[in-house]
Length: 123
Image (cartoon, rainbow, N blue to C red; front, side, top):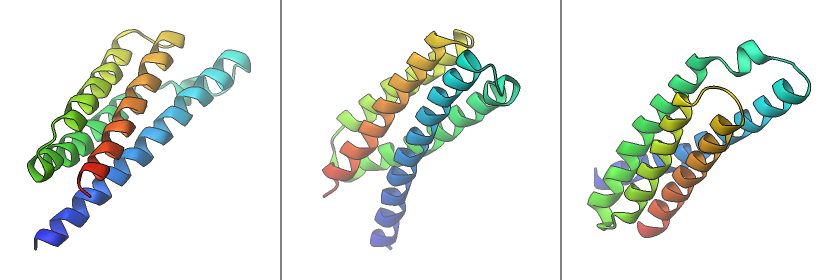
């Protein structure tokens, strides 16, 4: 049973890394396609996409990073991930544009780093 729970937590960390990467790609493509080419603004910059992404990041992050602390006792991944999630939440408040993209990309980079550190700490 314990090994099954650990496998689920590892999968959640990997999912968190994948979601972070997809979010960063979305932000960069959004800035390029909308800012430079004027394409896809309604779909790429829809507030619902950002709220749903933040909700997924919060759920995956809190579960996997929280379980990581319980497993290996290191709080650093949870703190790093919390800071990243805070930056992502702040990005929702600044409106669309470069500040939002910068906050989001920094946030997802920190969340991905937290998941990576969580996986390494569990080894």
